[in-house]
Length: 419
Ligand code: CAA
Image (cartoon, rainbow, N blue to C red):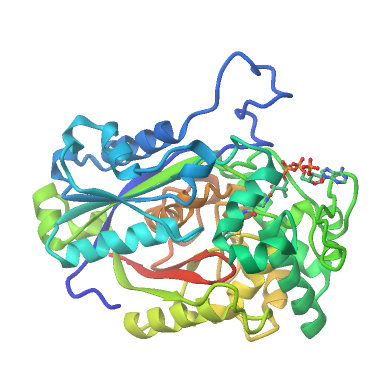
């Protein structure tokens, strides 16, 4: 959809993403174990909401509506009704309409889309916030919760680690169809961790992978699936993180900017946005993200831009192979040639189309409901020169996000430009 009126991203805030492997994350091997607790879902929502208000200098009173992205609060945290949880963050938000959105790992993207729809419906200043806390259970138990984003009856039995197995299946088919190797895929992992090592907010800010270790299974890199057919096609280094965290952004119309005393130049602008949804459990071809391609084609058409014009992208790399498939669905590479882009370093910070500059889901982390919101904020931060050590040498003017739910079943794309 091309916005019917101009829509601006005023700014926002994200928390540090943490989980196993992050120095601040308390677990049984941490010296603070038993002495302090990790932040709760409510604390992440509060930090993100108040952080966004503070960073942008927006008074909470000015927020007309709010949308909360979260996938599985009921399961991980025994907590639903997150609109009403969010407004506990700030007394000036009490009474304002805040609503929770769920679309698996695209929940954050859907919160942003609903926020933009609210601007079309007459609101002037809106907030989209996303948060998830997943470390309350083991990765194996959590995998069962995340499997609710598949067709439970038909797909849960593929493996106890349902989503890792579904993307191992994509890796298997993709490798067989195009002669792609595990080393090709490992280039994505190495880039993600290199970027995250420059990003203090990243879950994996202190962990690194070299190409050799990320290319094959080993003691540090187990092939952990139970499904014997798929097991050779996925290792720990291929997976996004089980992270906790939150992110919030504020969006406004031109009228809203006036009310906030801000100018368009302080912001970035939404050129177009799209959502595509495909039926659960019915992937036709494991070597393409055809739902994402539908969303991308629509957003390019509505924004009036081509893939060649995109100067920075945030894509849903829930697994390393997914990033290669994303390059192809978003038109950065021809079908079957995504690996060439990664191998040549073209998606690194110094390449022609930098992708996931802060580390992506693989290494920045993937607190599911926060991910789509973080993606938008990352494009904003790159365009405004706020990315510190991973800031691109030349500030990008056109950017794209692709946030995906399930096995490419719901995708949200947003095209953006600096003002
Ligand atoms: N040798 C052999 N096996 C080993 C091993 C070793 N040295 N170390 C671990 N394992 C095996 C074990 O079987 C272990 O499970 P159990 O302990 O329950 O037996 C399993 O590997 C996992 O080990 P850990 O729990 O120690 O692993 P971890 O906590 O470090 O987590 C991970 C690693 C399992 C890869 C985890 O990071 C993960 O699950 N990542 C993926 C998260 C995910 O799927 N997110 C959703 C993405 S899909 C999406 O985005 C779309 C959507 O809508 C859902």
